[in-house]
Amino acid sequence: MDISTINSTANNHENNLYNGSDFVDVNVVRQAANDTSTPCAKLFLDDKFPLAKGSHKDACSYVVYYQQLLVFMKDGSQTGLRCPKQFVALNGHKSEPTAILLKDNGVHVELTFDRQSEKGAEDCANIEDILVEGHQYWISLVNVENTVVASSVLDQEFTAKDGSDYQLKR
Image (cartoon, rainbow, N blue to C red; front, side, top):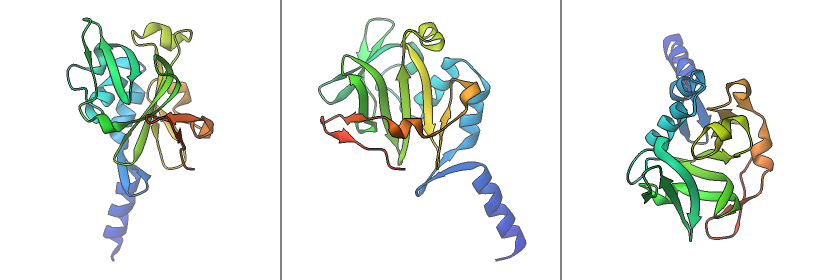
């Protein structure tokens, strides 16, 4: 292996967050983090966790119906994820979760809801934050001042969609 190969490999690692055997593109995360609005973060959701119909930016409520994530839209319609298995767990009650945990290619994304918070009150679906799992930390796509979040997400107790405990591993 020559020095150009080593430099190329190092640059690839700088441009990606490593999580197990999967990579998350940091450029997408940076773009969302540079725009402090929730709509930009919702574009990230549309890319990684597309809905069967519509866009996350038009969502006004997320609930769990049986073992499926159900999304109510501004126009009164409802939909789910295009790939339902991406919904893995929740925090709180199914009809009004405080957090939803999604997973794509081994990477978790947490949507937190709080209608009392400043960000949550501004968003139609009361999304307070959208956190992307990194190697040993979480990255906020909404709250730029908390771009890198400590392991607080790991300390939460989630309920898997089948009702069992869902553990995030450190």
